[in-house]
Length: 531
Image (cartoon, rainbow, N blue to C red; front, side, top):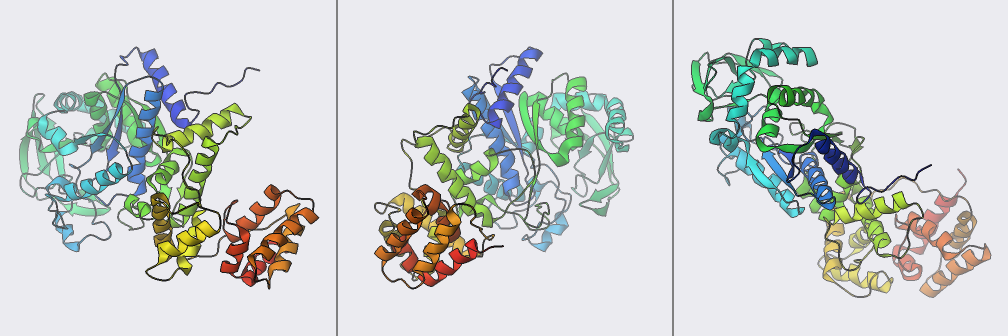
């Protein structure tokens, strides 16, 4: 049987890039620029889902470049969309602006020119902090500049055909009686309440403000009847066809999408190919992030995890790891998961810089490639400082106010976890300190030690309960493992997993005296108790 071949750097990003290029070759399209797109929501606070789309797309861009193709990420801001709901944490007076384009609503916090500019700044700032490079495209500007005019004319001229196809594909009959376009009402300035009635084939759309269901609530129209020109920038395509117009206008070759947009993408693919004559981009579908209760993260419910919030407690690379680790399947994410991702990133880096290679070439390439993409292909010259995140959080929680960094740093050096203070270690201590102040050292899932290490760990636990000398503790560990025929690599990871939450950790003597020998003994005995 022929061995599977490693594609690119061995990750799903490389597989997506490879499949996209193979499709482009079959279509016979020019490969001088393979552009990818990500949509940026502009109606609510950024969250890891909204930045996740752009981070993943940027990863595909990097994989395309790894394969030898020029690529760029177009970040398209949906800032001409109307406001559907007032997001949690925003002032209630915004309800007066429901259904108005977010680019025309005042900034509720008074620091930008509009609501959209404020939200867009937060989102772009998050992407900048994460090292994501992109070309920004405002939706409002796209319509104002005429960038989508050709596509709009074609779609509206064939609106009857488009309406029938939408009904056939997803069962929605709305567009059999109205155009897939919504003007801004010249009277009440709302966008979703208007119904586009006719198009003259050149530039003018006739409409009536009839009302609509907006954000799950009926909103009455003002009854105004009017006309608007496509070139006026006073209206936009509906989502059912807007993606297709963007793909054709900006020559997009790849775009990922969330599972909830499956029907919209199905329609847009058809419109792009059959109406606009542009082969739709290659897609990758992902599921949305959920909170720990399994509920979808949403702007209106206020259960979002903002990228800036994650970066208060962890490195940008750890958030990129969350996105690049895999694309399939839903994940329940919260700030409580940060230690696991920080430690996993350390494990990847340690493996990358070690001389050990996995005997399985596919797995080896995938792990190395995953690390390389989390660094955005800007790998450091050497591995950084690796200290279990929970250990730093644990120590920060014990530190006196005003001397936290010095306290933690001194102990890490004493434990043999660091050679000397450093700026990198200072940053890690600060992240862990903020994290433990927010989360506390909540009990983790109970660890059970089984198999060969169990007896040795139990003997060690009984021996240390009343010890007060770090040398005695260290000797007790080696006596327990040698007496049971274990190697250090079979013994210490089990102890660390219970006490630190990692398979590596500090020099046990000084650490256990700081931790409290009796508490350490009780924790280890509990982990070795028969279920």
